[in-house]
Image (cartoon, rainbow, N blue to C red):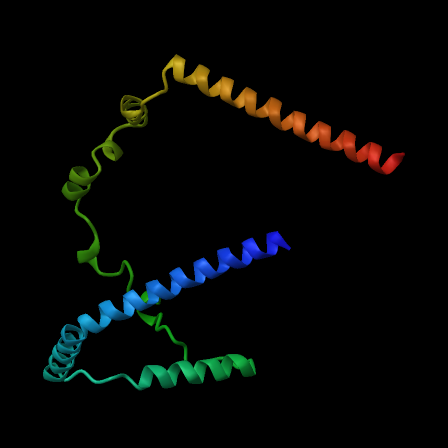
Amino acid sequence: DATEQLKQEEENIKAASRGMMMEQDAKAFEEKRDAYDEMREKIRSRASTLDMNKSVATQEAIKAATQRAAAGEAAETPTVDLSKFSSGLGEDPEDELTDEQMKEIDKVGQMSIPDQVVEEFKNTRFPSPDATLKQAILMLVIFIVTAGVILNVDTFLRFQYTD
C-alpha cells in the first residue's frame, strides 16, 4: 500500500513537471508568435515570387503507387529511366583519357609489377611489435572468456535436460 502511494506520488510529480514544461513551451511559443508569423509570411511571399506552388502531382503519384502496391500491381511505366545508362557509355572518344593523362593520374599503375609492390610496401604502415602483442593478448582473453561461457552454459543445459 505504501509502495503504491510512493509510485503514485512519483507519477504525479512527473506529470506535473511535464505539464509545466508544456506550459513553458506554449508560453515561449506565444511570446515569439509574431516572429513566427512574420517568417511564414516571408516564406509564402518568396514562394509566390518564385512561382512555387504546392505540388499536387507528387501527392497523387504517392496515392496511386500506394493503391497499386496494395492491389499487387506493377507500375505502368518504370519510375526510373535507365535508357541513358544502357547505351552510349564508353562510346565517346572524348571520354577516354590520353596516355599523358593516365600517367599523370595513376603514376603507380604505370610502373612494372615489382615496382608497384615496392611502392605499396613503402606506403604500408605495419603495427609495432608492442601493439601486435597487446592485440594478441586481448584476443586470447576474449577467447578464454567466450569459451568459458559456452562450456558453462553447455554443462548447465546438459545437466538440466539429461538428469
